[in-house]
Structures are given as structure tokens and as C-alpha cells.
Image (cartoon, rainbow, N blue to C red; front, side, top):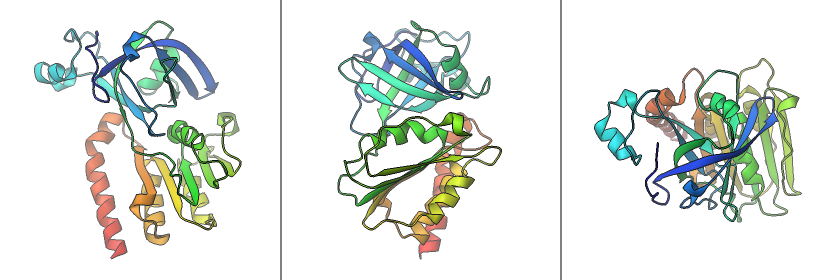
Length: 281
């Protein structure tokens, strides 16, 4: 696929793989660069994300590549598959985009791609999107998530103001999945090892037991939709956090790929909001 000139924040960008690195047994880092990133920019938010475009085999796409033309000219089953990933880092001077992928063998689409891709190969993507960065006026920060959220949590920790307390809970499969994270002196990072347990159970327990520090919190809670729903209810209903102090969303849902999750995510969110309103009334 070739690319048309990108429109900032909306257009198609094309990244060339510069290098890859296995960070842990199940986390792979891919660094993209090249002329196709000339119009890309990120940095306002720490949860910036891009949507990677994986072409369907044996489908001829328009040249230059244009998603509007794809949607207009091709049946939906021939559209590229999209997978959403957090921008772990963006080096504007070097024009290098870093993305970390959770890899579980041959399962999924993006993880196997990251495991097998080689320098010089290319991938198209849209973005960035994003909405969260640690607020400087917060009394303290709460960050909680599973592996899918780890890149965003790591990026956020690098922007938490010096000296601001941060309580950080990261759930991973086991100790081999822990990473060295740069964090301010006021950050307390707790790694939760899930083992054979269900994703999110340890996170829910840890946040529920947390003795909240004094001051107004700014919270970032993302990951599997089931535990995110439980923690949203806890933080909104039981702890009384206003929405403007909370960034919370399901990045994925157990038993569904991204296509299935995105198709039903709006209805899921609406149901969560209705249940929350009823509990708060």
C-alpha cells in the first residue's frame, strides 16, 4: 500500500520498521521511522494511540492508499483490519515512533506481526488519538491496568510532576513480565502477578484496599473491560470521584477480538453509564 500526504491527526502515515526488541517474554517493542512519518506528531497526551492497518491478503487497494476510497469502493470484508496501540514514545527530533506489543504466540493479529516483522518492512496507520495526561494540579495520581495498559502507564509515569505521589498497580502474568520504569520519587509501583488467575481480579482487590492519600486524585484505569467496569463503579460510586478526575475505559474485552469489541463497545459503555447513574441517584 502506498500513502497519500497525511493530514495531521487524521491521515494515513506509513512507518518503516527500524528495529525490534523483546522486552519480556510477552512484550515486543517495535520502533518505526522513515519519511512516511514526516507529518506525524504526538506528545500532548500520554495515552496517545494509533490504529495500525493490516491489509487483507490478496486484496488490491487503491493507490495512493486512501481509507475513504477503500470504504466507498470495497466491500467491508475487504477493508484492512485495524488494531489500536498506545504510543509508548515519540521522538520528534529523530522521527521515531515506539510501540510495545503484547505477544501470546500465534494468537491474534498484531502480536504475531510484531514477532515476525523485520527492519525495512512497512506498516500504515492512522492517528494519533488520545485524551489523558497526568494533571499538574492533582494532589496525587492513581494508575492501574493490565499488560495492554502498561505502555500508557509507563508514558504517564514519565510525566507525573516531580514529588507528586503516585500509586501504581500493574497486573502481569508473572515476575518475568515486569519492566524497569522511569518514575518520580513519589511513585509507589506495585506489580501484581496473575499466574493462572483471571485478568483484573488482583487489580480490583488492590484498588479497593488502597488507603487513598490526602488531596484530589487524578486516576487512569484501563485494560480488560470486565475489571474496568468493576473499578469504575468502585471509584465513581463508592469513592465518589467525579468523571473529570477519571480516565477509564476498556481497551479490550475477554473473548472478543478488537473488531468484535469495537462493534459493541458503545452499547457496553452506555449500559455502564446507565447502571452508574442509577447507583448515584
